[in-house]
Image (tube, rainbow, N blue to C red; front, side, top):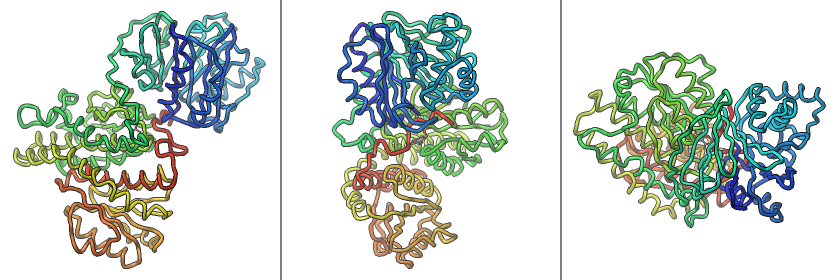
Amino acid sequence: MCGIVGYIGHDNTAIKTVLKGLYRLEYRGYDSAGLAYAESGQIKIKRAKGAVSGLNDKCKQIGPQTLAIGHTRWATHGKPSEENAHPHVSFKRELALVHNGIIENYKYLKEILKDEGYIFSSETDTEVLANWIEHAKLRYDLALEDAVHEALKGVHGAYAIAVLDSTGQKIVCAKKSSPLAIGIGEKEYIIGSDATPIIGMAKDVIYLEDDQIAVVTKDDLKIRDIDNNDTSYKAEKLLLDLQAVEKKGFDSFMMKEINEQPETVADCLRGRLTAPGPEIALGGIEAVMPSLLRARKIIIVACGTSWHSALIGKYMIEGLTRIPVEVDYASEFRYRRPIIDSEDVVIGITQSGETADTKAALELAKTKGALILGIVNVVGSSIARLSHAGIYTHSGVEVGVASTKAFTGQVAALSLLAIKLAYRLGYIDDEKLMDLKDALEEIPSQIQEILDDSTAIEGIADIFSQYEDFLFLGRGISFPVALEGALKLKEISYIHAEAYPAGEMKHGPIALIDEACPSIFVMPKDNTYGKTLSNLQEIKARSGRVIAITDVVDEDLVNSVDAVVVVPKTLPELTPLLTTVPLQIFSHRVAIKRSRNVDKPRNLAKSVTVE
Ligand code: G6P
């Protein structure tokens, strides 16, 4: 949630850089935006409700600046409004602060500050934090960085902050649980909640650790540890290029990302299928393979779309390896007193690598002695770092809030893991291994075939875009695909959509069926096809309209349905990698027909760093 940007350097480009960074980080929250800078010994702020473009309009008159901090917000405390937007200036105007996270004890701190005469102008926990730091600064006559250090001792919660004071000489950053990156450019530093504002501006980046404080001046970057002593740091090379954050001629990031899937799935598979020998190469888990092979059970935790790929992973891993797999919502896992011990493996699946619930679930599992694996897209993210081992999905930067290419990347990574384990455990022989590897190798070009036919899918979407309710149905490994299809549609078009295992339909959901509630069946020709076809007929018998996503041209089916999409044929274990794609195109088109902002759907945020 929320995006932070900062710039300090010798160029007078602070405002432009911060605004550009905020546009790139808008996917993290777009309720309101703001920026702060210091001029003639005074702090100045500009804030606007709504998108960054509103802030941009308000910043046109600002003169050249060498430092600024900015923020794009996803509301937690207090409604989206200009007053609640960040930056927050402290009561005595000593400092301005932007914050991502939640200050859990803000009410307690606020009472102390009120007793000291502080008056508040917003409902946010962030204003409390700004005042709390100012209070420490004035009380002990401290430099800004020392005041931040002193104040944070009394703060409970999650935060990534950037602070400047009225002297305009430095930006002080600190973090706990929420991410913060600092790009090291030529005579300039760029701060970001993630690397996206830094791309194209700096080649080296450091990711601040929990409890560290960074003091950034025009010429220098110093990092302090929890005891406020200077500590060394190592910069990493930033490998992302500008293309990653541009639309490349597509109308939306989501459509660009849907179309990138042949490439991103290939990137996930690259080098892993073609390693010498028959085995699948997954360098990130090789060291822990003995423990993995001994696993008593696997638990997968995730949220949102990643939870759907976890469910697909369950079908794949159990089906191929016979290791029992439990899948849990990360937000539920912690509070159900999960039964885990050191013989279990807990896998966290996450695009961002920063989702607070997933992180907390993995941290809990770690304390129980379980082996922690991360299936993560963002390299170097918090979950990548806390995992004992893992698999990067290599899907590249995903900007669209509704996840597409990250999902297929996760499913591809899970299929590699399942096949590798099955082969090592002796559940599949060389021949089956080769079949699976060959089938995986074909997936990118098969996705391309689906994309090449997207006009036909969009035509179906045009016909169905007026409906207000949808049912998505599938059996076996296609059930999570149905769940993902329903989520995609509701996320970006705001149409009510539910998914059920097709066999459950007659135990309740069928009551919804009439001409006004179409069903989308995900039904590749696997061992459940015949049963699913019967379920489909039950819906047709009740005047329900039906779209089928399948991989077989079957006359019985074609004659029964209102529309059919045929995807290329692959092995049953891998069908989600193909059947998902028409559902993405369908949802995107329906949302566009309804004039929705597909990249920034209302109320959502891409990276959910609060629980
Ligand atoms: C948010 C996003 C979803 C995403 C979920 C989990 O809700 O809007 O698209 O699936 O978080 O995110 P993660 O980064 O952990 O995969």
